[in-house]
Image (cartoon, rainbow, N blue to C red; front, side, top):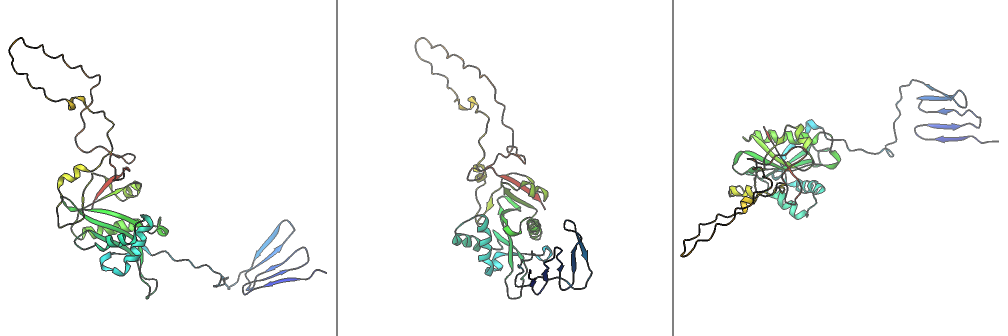
Length: 297
């Protein structure tokens, strides 16, 4: 004789009958599964008012994503209790010593450079806000109405949900409220993201680290660029020849003329070298291609 096997829990009662047609009963009553045949079972759903819930002891807890409408943008120097969390967020993307990162964030001030955090409200009254993103704003040399945007980052677990766009839109509102009319930034691989926000390819600018001192304008000329593929012109290496002094005796015959170059190199175009969304003439300090972008706000 085959014994009857019964599994019981707080949510369901599973009864296995030794007969060939087992019956599955859910309690509280939600559904009855009655096989019509061995190969084609028939599912019969019975309506009921009771809802099936999982046991809280075994249900995984998920942290809800912050609400975009509730996010705020606040300067780092106004929330010193969040310095550590902000440093961890940035170091997650660009690893650096913690002491160096905290020192850099500690330089934030209303006089620029200024570090801004995108914050989510506290999940509980006792908890601190969640640092969702970060960006740094600096003044631009010889462009009093421009700001340079740097160190733009969003928490890795929250990317792809619109927080990057919310951060950039907040930067525009923040800059407009303080009289600035243009934002500049650089990127290696996020051209399409910034292009969708209205940014266009631009020229290099120099951010001011210390606003109390003015850097020489010639510093921009030293900004590294990719080596040009155009061969150098031979005429640029020639020096002007001075007429020989008159001497007593027969004069020497003139030197033979220089041979004509085989190809003539075109004159370089005026202005900065061209760049596109697929190619750029600029490089960062490590020699990697970098794109300069800007937007009027």
